[in-house]
Image (cartoon, rainbow, N blue to C red; front, side, top):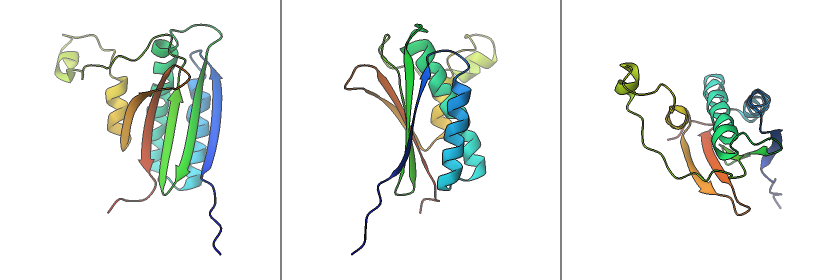
Length: 147
């Protein structure tokens, strides 16, 4: 009889303060390397996770002292799934794709590229509501080449 192993996972919870995204970035990178994510993809993941945490701190939690950002990473079936949860003081209402040319030419503010950047760095990403309230930004990355 073959015993099925549970998926590997880590959970992190950080204060909703700028700077703590670095702690998450390094922990997720270490976990990703451990489960076999290629080193160049780990660098992409580090950037995406940092952006997601910064968005959770600034936008979801509205930089409210005492709130937290929770990060769950699960590796199963050669897919690393990362979920960044804020506590929804500001509910995610969708966003408009940035006009990169406008930003390059100074016709639009330089900020507002985080979600676009995340989408370019991971295989899939999106938002969902947490059953406990809050916003969940999820992202996934395949640890093996897709056929």
